[in-house]
Amino acid sequence: MRLPSFLLSALCVALGALGNPALAKWPEQSIRIVVPYPAGGGVDVMMRMLAPLMSEQLGQPVVIDNRAGANANIGTAIVGTAKPDGYTLLASATFLTVNPLLETGLAWKASDFTPVAGLSRTYNLFMANGTSPWKGLGDFVAAARAQPGLNIAPGGSGSPQSMAHRMLRVRAGLQFTEIPYRGTPPLLVDLANGTLAMAVAPLAAVLGMLESGKLKALAVAGEERARLLPDVPTTAEAGYPDVVAPSWYGLHAPAGTPPEIVQAIAEAARIATADAKVQATALKAGGETAFLHTRDFEALLVRDRQRWERIVAEVSKGQ
Image 1: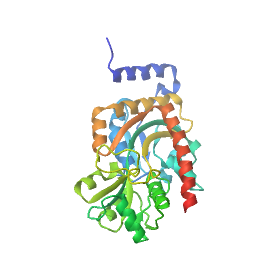
Image 2 (image 1 turned 135 degrees about the vertical axis):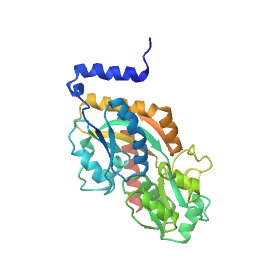
Image 3 (image 1 turned 45 degrees about the horizontal axis):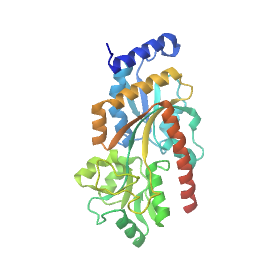
Image 4 (image 1 turned 180 degrees about the vertical axis):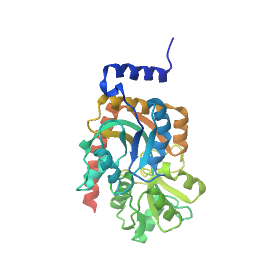
């Protein structure tokens, strides 16, 4: 008789615990995933979809703890100094790679964490007010050249959204007035009411406002069109092939977390991301589940760092 996959996974974890002291009693309490962004953003939305199913697999509540601020550095530092016992995890994204390239004096470093798993990806969009006259990115660039100093939201300095607009600024030779915001939700309000001319944000966080007509997508900051927005051209199609800024979301644990616990968490995440309802919900929310087990996730992080090192160097030269 062939066992269902979820029973087989549970059996493997149980058998592993017999020979691994780290798993013998773990988990005995709730597991906290620290999201270093406000509720409602792309990272937060994805983690809240996965948490209930991960809880089912691990047998303990998986709770989301939003610790926003300082360009995702506050929540990240909390996890970096947490006990490596598997009870505190970081909802990670591109900031973990880019922040150290752009900022000094961080209260954390990359070696404070160990990769657990990659979970999903989402597209980033150049957006404008739903009533703006611009039909695409080319129209916006023309307007920005004619009116230097248009208000935009730069995003956190370590975010792919921030790097997307910086790359466009360098490539198109534009000048903006940058208005900082504490997370994506508040800047979307000002984009919709016309305070901002343009912003870049993840599709997962803005899909509802796009559908309602409050916002307009000018371009996808990527090499391929978003499945949910097949009529929105990419930045490459608009003539800016270097203005590419995909987002990935994953999980990291404090360095020193026992490998057996890391793998148990990764397996719970794998099962959660494989759930058909989660995949459908993620797509409707503007994201795509894209699970990567620990080794594959580590390889992605290496490629990601190499790519962003090049981009940061190019953007820095153009400032």
